[in-house]
Image (cartoon, rainbow, N blue to C red; front, top):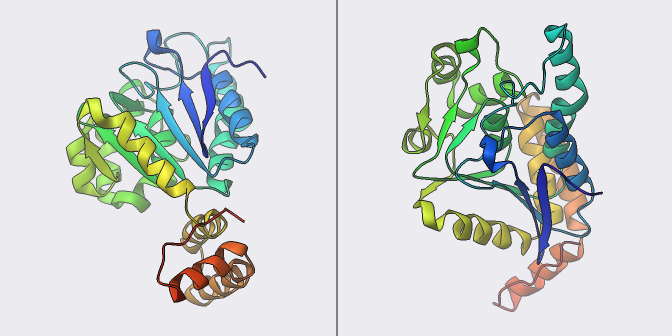
Length: 260
């Protein structure tokens, strides 16, 4: 598939997916998310995914200003875009069997905020900020933000973001526990890729199971969460990486994981 709004490339064991509309601060119409979904559905053996944005922004939102969601019936066209493009892509990211990193500089606004925070690790530059601006134009958060943000930062801070519609700078996002790390702007790409590369070198079958556990445990009772852990542990124990990890431990050397 030829992409018009993203770039997708394998760099070693990492699939790097870059929103590529710098002239619009990487505003992402439905097509952009459809292209993301296609890219991550075709990992081709990649063992980690890195999301980024070209130029000085990660993603400024869904490109409403560019007319991407305009129609004679804006409510229904927006509903269709969410249920047929944005939401399935966000669900596909959540279901990935490999770890995910996002590299954020400049704005991560609206659906871009949701995309950035869907990663297991969000690395932000000092210029980055996170914004739920929907209330400023009479709309409501989407892309899973109302599920995600209270779990990341608590209801009070999520309410602050969503009801006041103010920017959350990278340093504040780090203090709130929303993101993993803040780095200098010129160090962002290297730092984020190094983290993705480190994850890709790990036992990625187990990591995929960990991702699943973390997500579903939010909705489970204690006993159900422990049962899922036991089931996933059974699956993990059957992997070659688990055997290699045990042997490496006994031999007092660093394990070499293959993602199998």
